[in-house]
Figure 1: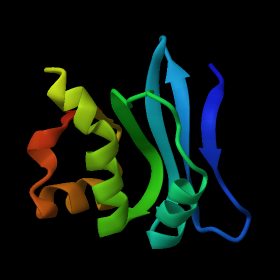
Figure 2 (figure 1 turned 120 degrees about the horizontal axis):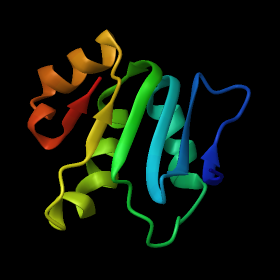
Figure 3 (figure 1 turned 180 degrees about the vertical axis):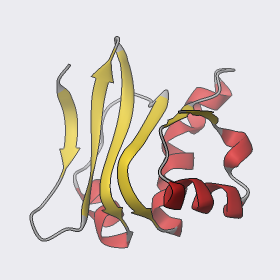
Length: 111
């Protein structure tokens, strides 16, 4: 399991990694995923045709609206293919944000 794309700078409050788990791409979020972290993700450039089939948010302590929008956008091709992307192990704060925004039906919550 190796990271194919990673964003993390010591001055950022959180990080986004695109990793491979069981042969499939998974977004892994950690810390506070806010506008700064999302901007860093976009600044890192294209990640090829890899589409996240799941989002592991077990280490995410905060997710703002731009972070949530990134999750929805990065997993959209998975939904278009007929699969429902997994939202893995959301913390209470992340689960609340997803539910309050109305995005919960876009994911299969695991854990």
